[in-house]
Each structure stands twice: as structure tokens, then as C-alpha cells.
Image 1 (tube, rainbow, N blue to C red):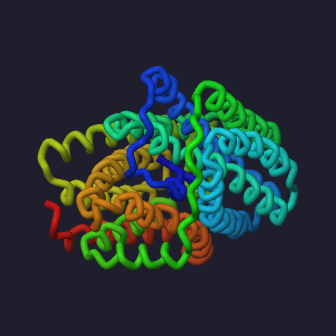
Image 2 (cartoon, rainbow, N blue to C red; image 1 turned 135 degrees about the vertical axis):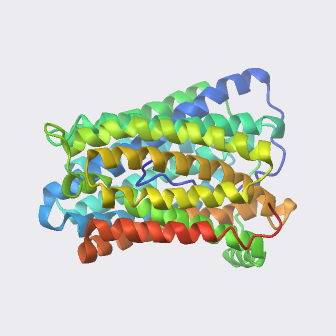
Length: 421
């Protein structure tokens, strides 16, 4: 699984633990497949642009400084997205509606992507990508709130699965599609991605009915900070938070630069360029991640153990990052993709189950999961800056080794957890 923007959404200011309004069977029948379509379109855009079109565009503007510039563009946009997501969630909460925000976000993303495709300087690319992030976070924040809004508690497992299916599908299709437009038709590629997200937004809001919810008032920032402090007082939750943060930091430090790694570090077979290599690796990555997600969840339930599988998944991910150092060729990259995909898929399935067992308060589960999202989003802010500095100082081998060490430390973070086996 490779992502420059694979970002679990910060939860909108809603109360997911509350029971959703009673939903008719026909409404749920329409909603479930649309959750997959809407999320697949979102990840198609995030991955197709973040892993392919954006790094190529940055390289075309200034090839000599592509690593530093891409780190800057990605880092600024990630900060912007992290700040904008809860704001967008608050807006949809206060309006009591989700569909209009999903529609506006999808259509707005199309316009922002048209501007991004026309950018010819690093500054304009940064501004354009931030505008895309703004529109996509309006879309994403409202979409994230649909499940707790409209799905009864007893059906949320199925709904979560439908959401999850969209991630590997959208990622693989997005990368493969984006590679078709490199390097000559990048602007058209941006328009295609925009058309996909706009079409998904139109389709979702046309098919899925919505009943207006009561308006809610936003939680003051002071109370949000106090809630964060209360949650982090739990030692077990704190260790899970640290482990997730380190795993994500190591993972994104490498995955953000996959295009440049394939261009500058990996010896590809004759006739295979970096764009084709990215497109070839994407479905392999998605397939192994999806397989490991299913098998990891089933295995952890069967043996009744979470910590060993989380620790082994982190450790395996760290070891996988050493493969391109030892084998900087196409075979090494294939091995890395398969092993890293298996490790990451198993980790996400089992660590998510582990998190639910160490939440400090059953009554504040939504709040605590929101705190955990900082461990998902925070590394995406730090990773591009860290990676660009490492590549400039010690090269791609140094980047892989550092990411491996960070991930291995994340594996050790599960050891002090006491309340879960």
C-alpha cells in the first residue's frame, strides 16, 4: 500500500457512538455500495495524484531540486489538510446535512484540479494542491460522518468493510490510471481525476437519500485539548498511539517518494520506466494489503492474541524496507512491495482491533478514536519533510534504513501494553 495522501479522516464533530436513526432496508441497500464507490474515488484521486502526477509535475518544473520541492509541497498541503478537515466537519455538523457538502467538495475538487494542472511554478503547485486538499477535506469529512449518521450500530461492521474495500481498489486504479498521462498529458490527467471525484459525488448524492439531522454546536477548543490530555493519561493507549505514530512515519517516509526512488535508486529492466513500474506495482501492493487485512483480522480473532501480530507486522515492515538497500533492482522492489503490503495490511487490521481494547473510556470511544487519528495524520506532515532532508543528506539508502529503524521502534512499543495479550 503506497500513499502520499492515504489519510484516515479526522472525525467530523459528530457522535459516532450514538445510535443512528432507524434506516429502511432499501436505504441501506443503496448506501452500502455507494460507500465503496465514494471512498474508492477519493483514494483514486489521492493516490493517482500524490504518488504519480504531483511528483512528476514537480520534477518537470525543477528537476535538480525535485526532492526538496516535493517535500515542501507535500508538507505544506498536509498541514493545510489536517487543519481544514475538522473545520469542514464542523460546517457539515452545524448544517445538519452531509450530501450538499459531499457534492460541493467533489465538484470543487474538479475546479481546483484544473487549476493545479495549469500550474508551472512550485509556488502555484503548492497553492493548487492546498486548494485541492480544501475541497477534498470538505468531501471527506462529510463522507466520514455518513456511517455513524445513517447506519445502525448492528450494521456498522458491514459498512466499515464497504468503506475499507474502496481503499485498495481506488489506490490501484488511481496509480495505474495516472501513469497513463505521464509525462505529456499531466494536465489532462488532473482533469480525469477531477471528473472521477465529481462523478462519484454526483452519483452518491443522487442515489443515497438523506434526512436532515438536528444542528449541533461545535466543541470548544479548550475542551478538545482537555479531552486529548485525558485520553493520553492511559498508559496502554499511549503506547498504542506511539506505535501507530512510528509505524505511519516510517511507512509514509518511504511511500511518498516511490516515484523518485524508482527513477533514481532502483535499476529497472530494459524498456521499463518509472511510470510503468509504479503502475505495475500498484495492483500487487493493493492485492497483498487487502489479503493480509482479511487474514490478519481472522487470525488474531482465532488465536485471541493481538500484541504479537502487531509487533511482528511492524518488524516485518521494517525488515522489508531494507530489501531495496540490499537489492536495489526490480526484483528487490517486487519483494519489497509484496512483503510491505502483507505487513501493512496485517498491521492495520490487528492494530485497529487492539486499539478498541485499550480505549480509556467506553462512553467516549469516538473522542478517543479521534485522538488516535492524530497518529495517522501527524506522520504525513512530518514524513515529506523528514524524507526530503534524509535523501539530501544520506541518499535513498539512508532514507530506507532510517524508516526501517523508526518502524522497528514502533514494533517495540507494543511490549509495555499490559491490558491486552
